[in-house]
Length: 411
Image (cartoon, rainbow, N blue to C red):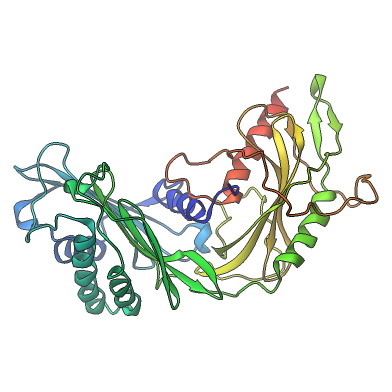
């Protein structure tokens, strides 16, 4: 796998917004609460006249990964009724529903204003049609919603005994991948995601999704939140050349007895490098406490725009817990975004250092490994958030970096 796949990338960033590192707790913004309740009633179809709001919590922040000026709001509601309690959690970014989760009761049933569909396909249609009216009411763009409804016509319903736990025990989807114009529909057994595409590049951060897995409904729409800041100016071959030069310049060391650093030269494997292109928010890497792990380079980037970030992994013969070097290359400037060892949880005896100015001694005939076979070594990275672990290579690698650093310091 890639250090983490695209969905993975989107997930850790999403997870980071849900697990708020720093927020300003404040009096509840009635506008957000009102919009959330209207969404639950008009889009999801909950009969709120049958529920009492038992608990409300609200917080907001202006996170660094949104430039410090885009408002991110978090609100949770506990709704109680004689038929069972329902909890709702949501995150609004710049007024858009980044994510909204409805948790069904452990014991009891959800009270609707309508008859809920018996399968996810029909229920998704109902929700999208309701959302179309909701979006028009609040002045949101709706062209992607109409596209999403059209693509659903090509999806099938799973058999009744498909074996997955879902909200209200509805039947799921048949997994599929369907592309039309600038939209790709991916369905799993429990959910559907409509992803924006431009120049054949998928952009999971700009998407619409509905999922019914695990006795909950998860809704997200970031289609109108993000725009495209630019497409990669560099080809895959050019990125490989840039990344390979950077990989060879890396000062790789292991920690020896007494905490001393011992330089090592990797023995590169003749396996194809893994190359992926992600479209990421311009400031996704910024943290409350700067770690300076990602090099922003010379470009000025909009936090609500998506930019090309290539990810390349070159493999070498295992050294300690490391099996390769991971390199990030900005596709808009060709600059190195990050450079770090790549491995798996285990023996953190590698010390990470910054790139050297001079290349280490390498064989004269050392070339980029050819794409002549699949890598035989596939290792899972360390995930900074063990949930939907979205992940992005950067967040994963940063966590690995910190573990290695602490281990070295403790020796």
